[in-house]
Each structure stands twice: as C-alpha cells, then as structure tokens.
Length: 393
Ligand code: A2P
Image 1 (tube, rainbow, N blue to C red):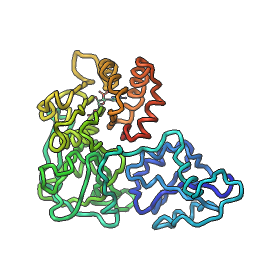
Image 2: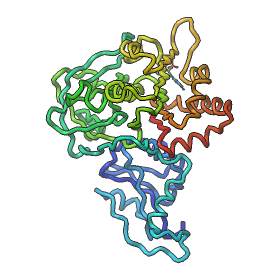
Image 3: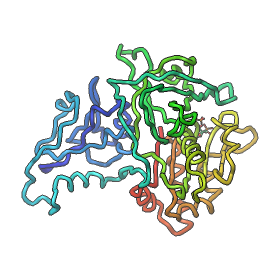
C-alpha cells in the first residue's frame, strides 16, 4: 500500500449490523465484533461488491489517511472520525483544487459501481431513529395476503401517531423484535421495505405498510406476522437513499420482483396513481410467485388498469404448467423490454430473491444484444444516471 491512501470505513452510527457487507465481501476484508462492523485496510481491494448491498449507506465511507485506522481502533468507535487535514505526498496523482475530494471520488470507480438515486427523486430522510433511539409505532392492522395455506404473507400497517416518520417509496424501516438471541444479546433490527406511498397507507394518515412473509424459524417475521392490532412495535430508520422513484411523471418504470420484493413496487404504483397520474410514463411489472394463491396483492393488482401498469404475473409452481421465472418472461416480452432499454426515460428496479439477479442479467444481456447494445455498458451507464436499482436478499 502507498501512503497516504484512501481507506474504506463503515459509519458505526448508521450501520444496523445486518452483516450483509461481510457476507458479500469476496476477500474477507469485513469482520465484526459485538460492537462494530469494520474493514481491514490490508485486505480491502476496493472492489465495491459491498456498496450496493448495504441497506443504510453506512458502508460507503472513505477517508484519506497517512496511516490506516487499525481494526482495534475501528472496533472502539462510536462515530466515524472526521477527515483529517493531511499533507498529500509530492507526486499525488491529481492537480485538482481539492486533492482529498478528488481522491475520495476515485473510491467509487470500482467494479460494482455506486448506486445513485434518480436525478428527480425527492430527498429521503434517513436515520431519524437510530438503533439507540427507536420510535414506537402501533399496529393498525395485520392482514393475510395469500390463500396458499403453506405461504403466509402479511400486510402489516404501522401507525406513528404524532411522531415524525417521513418515508419515501423504496425506503426501508428497521423492526426490532423483542427478546434476545442465543448469546443473550438484544436482537438487532431486521429491515423491511415499505409497501405504502409517502402520504401513508391511508392518504394523509401517519401510517406505513409492510409486506412480510412468515419464514420458518424467522425471529422477526414470526413476531411481525403474529402481531395483534394495538400492539407496540419498535422501529428504526428510515433507511435507503438510492432505491427511490423518479419524481418525473414522464419517467418509465420497469419493475422486476419476486414475492415480498413487490413491496416497493406497490409503493411506486400507488404513488403514481395518487399523485402523478397524467404523465406519459408507463409502468411495466414482472412479478414472480409460486402460484396466484401465493402472490401478494393478487386481487388489488389485477384491478390496476393496464394503461397505467402492464402486469406480467409469472408463476413457477402451477400444476401441469412449465415453471416460469421473471427472466423467462422478460425474454418472452423481448421487443417491449428492448424498447424500454433503449429509452433514456426508463428506470429499472429489481427487488426480491438474490438468485433472480443472475437470470435477469442473462435476459438483459440477450435483449440488449438484439438491439446492438452491450448490456454491461448500458447497465453501468443507467446505474450512474440513477436509473438502475437492485435490492435483493
Ligand atoms: P420456485 O418455485 O423455484 O421457488 P416466494 O418468495 O413467494 O416463494 O416467490 C419467489 C418466486 O421466485 C418463486 O416463484 C420462486 O420459484 C421464484 N424463484 C426462485 N429462484 C429464482 C431464480 N433464481 N430466478 C427467478 N425466480 C426465482
């Protein structure tokens, strides 16, 4: 390593300790203890694989340092240190007026690329309620969305009463399940995308909805799915600064999701219906589920007019029919998808199972090829423009 260097760091005040970054780091440079999640400066190669997967943005912090912060120092932090005013070595490879800013900007030239919010998106609030100061919300409703007896997906409405909790479509909130883990520590928050628009599940009521699937043995999903009306829930957030919708009624939205990944797509659709109808932008949804009985919001979705939302509901487990995934339908609808890919007004949103990403990439590669485009280049350009968004788990 040459000094001074730019060092990758995690903001301990914003990090919710979900450890997704640690799991996604291909070189094992990220680790944690009971206090913090930290980055080893000796092994981090700035590949950026961890940047898009972080739900809070706490991962995306960089300092130019004369001497890298050690793991021990990072483990002890309660907040990120300010950028120190260091003298850059002679021969620093920039003649910019602000060499530190220039070097920090370099930090985003990695492989995955930095996710960027749509240019016209409203400004989100984040971290109003950190882990140390969660807000209490009251359960207004808990409704089952699926008829499949083996597949329990809930629509849960949380009311914040007079407390400020501004949240935009595409943002997430943290839910703190009560109780302790096997080591006797309080549970960490689990993140859920809001499925309601910014003005509330019910317009101008101070409430948000979540779409929650009961996972076998899932601590937080079991807690949420069993909640009674009137119960109090501790919430952190809001979180998320890039998976946001364009505030442009002429923007076209290409939305691809599986299962509960439909939550932000519902929020986008409702916001368009309520507040942005009348623009030229269309919305197209590719939604994968096992069967119609296990597809959340099947009934209400069918009622959204096709002129506003073109729906491709794709099923993988219908008896007597071949398995179909969203990526198969993208290919089947290749001409329409290609037309959207070549339109600079198009924004792509992908949310749901991580496994779908590879198949969707393959589908886009082939569709882009059919119009003489190179998908990787187009995707990177769209991402830089704030028009390509992925949130998978
Ligand atoms: P499968 O029948 O193979 O499980 P849910 O979360 O409600 O189970 O829905 C997830 C949907 O995504 C299911 O239809 C599931 O199909 C499908 N799926 C599973 N793996 C992939 C993948 N790699 N790419 C796209 N869809 C997938």
